[in-house]
Length: 517
Image 1 (cartoon, rainbow, N blue to C red):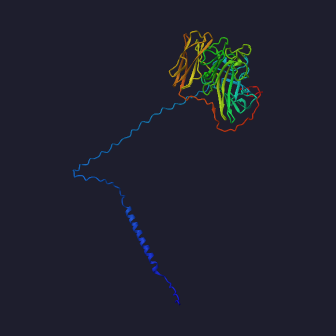
Image 2: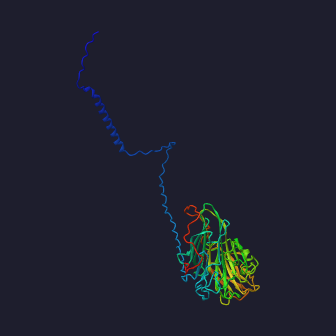
Image 3: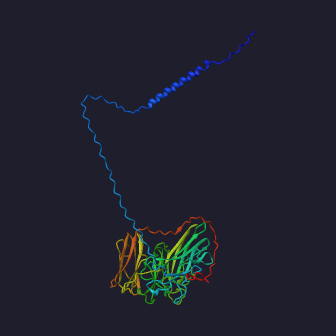
């Protein structure tokens, strides 16, 4: 079949193809303009408020009452409570400087860590106590009271070496402290470092630099606990009297024979006198009064107090049986076959061994030095004592009275304000050691409330001796809680030894001769 040839397509601009889009664009512009106009109109109208319509029954036509004006509520004026007036904070009581400003005691010490004490001027109002030993030195000499007859033993897991001996090593040999009035040392035994710090402090009873603060501490460098303890023995030669008796609160009379107190029976303090006439002690004629403070301020009360005769400085941990035990006087080396019957007394202080954890430190603290009893009124047979002039609420303390020439049938009465409570005994107590040169009676009180300048009065009955008084103050302060251990803030790797810096040689060192020749 023959098909005719295809005709070519005509070319040229076709207007009808773009007309529909133009029309649609015009309509869209018109619609947008209309909508914009409506928007402008409605945006000028106020915003309508919704009204809730409630349907009710149609009321009957009644007379419309006159509208009553609703009174506006009264405007309440708030009552502002008055601002409380705060009581002015009282300015802290200034602490007076010590008087005199220099120490009235001095210490001597040795390169093995032993130490001893003596007076310099002592009581500034009393010349007869100048340059008197407070621990042993040869009677009638000016030798050093360097503690060579004292004893310091430590306890580590049952072993009891002498502090400073060759079983250990010196970390810091004994040397003068920064003030030049005390001593510091550190000695290591196995993995326990024992530190020794002795410094002069103010006695709160008389504001004098007359007491020594004695601190020992033990630090466990190991990574396991160890049983650690301490024992001090002090040879109490006071002035020229080597066999001094003791005044112990809570004990009847004056202690002139061995005494072994433990636990709660250990008193917070004890006192030693040097009578001018050892054969006839007289509280009117006392030159030196030495005070042990065992539980006051930051002191750590010992677990055991032993009063006995002295025999040797290098004795075992528990030496009581070596000196005869009970039933003897303070004769030197009592129970060792008889000595020269020389009176020679000593004080032993024991802090029992307790677990010391790895990295922990335990401290043992006591005070020793010049004490002071109230000076008796001329013609009086009484002298009084307390440890310090101020106590905290809840704190217990002793009032001790010394009686000269006590007689059968006599008693002592303590009158105290109601803020104080008698913890044992009664306000009136009988005298037990009639016929001696002097004796003592003590009362244990508790301060229950604050009181300022409370007067405590002791009267000897019967008798024409004037009453004696003490003044004390009670403050509402937190009761001290002694801290026996502390955890170090730095972690130290356990080491077996430290390198000693100096090897000590046995010689005596004093505050006037700080180095050995």
